[in-house]
Amino acid sequence: MMKRSIPKPAFFKAIFLRLWLLGLFAWMAASCRPVDDQRYVAPSLSFAAAEYVVDATTGGMDVLLLLDRPAQKEISVRVDVSSSLTPGTQYSLPDFPLTVAAGTERIPIHLKLVDEAILVEQAYVDLILLPAVDYGVNLQGAGQTHIRITKELPFPTLKFLLPEGSPIGANTFLAETVPCIVSSNIPVDADLPFTLNVSTLTAGEDYTLDGACVLPAGTSQTTFNLKVSRREQLGFDKEGTVSLVAQEGVYLVDPTASSFTLHIGDPVPDFFKLLHTAAAQGGLGYQVRQALKTPATAEAPEGSWEGNGIVDLGQTVAGSPYLRNYRNMWRHSTYNCPCNASPSQWLRMSDLFPNRVYPSPTAILDYGVTQVQRQFSPADSVMRFCPNPAAPLTGKVVLTKPRTFTAFIGDYAAWQADVTGGKTWMVDARATGGDIFASTNPAITGTINVTVERIEGTFDFNKVDEMVLLSVWMRSDSDQFLMDGDARMTKYAIEQVEPGLWKLQYKLWPR
Image 1: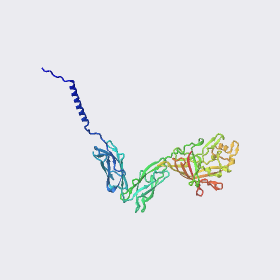
Image 2: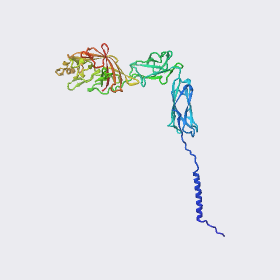
Image 3: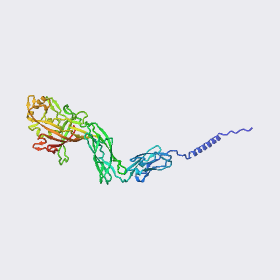
Image 4: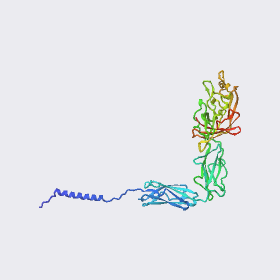
């Protein structure tokens, strides 16, 4: 019986080494084989140009959209559209999102223009690329494009000429008039009536038209007035749109300037910026500074302002558009009598009588030691504020009816003389309780009166130094009004409007 031979350990080592080398070669061969890259690279899109110009009579054009690399798969491109034209009627575009097939690099977007429906000389269509997951917007290219559409028209194109940046408002208390200027791009051969539409506002009730809506032959511009109806209703507020209406085959209207918004009403004025420092000695109203206009000089060709006297002003009642001035009294602890608060000179009237102030023997007499305490009588509703409904911090100031102011004159030395109980004026103030109109003191020999016939002014509560500007027309029963010695005053800018009627200018601003 034969003996079986047993393999030696070296044999097994050789077999294992051979198998290991075969596995290594197989692994190396597999690792060197190319593998497909399945990653997705999104294309970046942009328009071929940032701006195009096209004539409406051509019927349209293609706007080219570019991809920086072919689309690897079908994508949907989102585009935002804005235009001065009406979609579907005056122009059309493909439906968005736009489907782009795989492999595409250039996409024409066709803009179709309907020539007969476009009745303007200038229009536009804007296309804006919107980013998405499957693509990006090329920041180095045109992410949006502006298509300017032009057309030469055989008809005149009408528009309004309005002040730029100015809201249009009219106060109903003043029954203000709004001038409306209509312009044509070409002179018209014959009279051209045009149609006006005023939405929301009612003709005859809210407004009337003064002037014909006709562009005269041979002209390219005309003006008519829209007169707001007078209404005494504080707080009234209404808004309407005034529009030119195109007449097909006759004239066109400029879409950018064919209408404007008209705001009418009578807002309640907010006096906070003017009236914010309380009257002195606990009096009524608020302290407001006032200056008078001086004549023009070489150094100040427009003139300048003199002084900053104080007047106490306040609303007639809470929420009122009227301001009144006050004659505030307080009880002087030393003199033990009522005295005028100092100072509070409305329109600085005492300054307009230099011959009737100390040291003149015949002077304005009143309860107080200093000349600034010698005052004219107060008056209610001396100014009516009428805000612009479209910009209520600005507006006009008027006087609704004339107001007469009175001061007392007499023997200044007798008024200041020492008598039992103090000076004459102190004893008199105690006797009348501070009401000089109740005085029978023989030192008082007469009165002087100033009538304010008219006030025209403007206010702008946004300003600090010239918050209220006033032109004031006055007359007086005294031959000393505006006289300095024997001559007419030259200190202030005084204009004689007619015999006995004088115009002065003031500014008011808060203290």
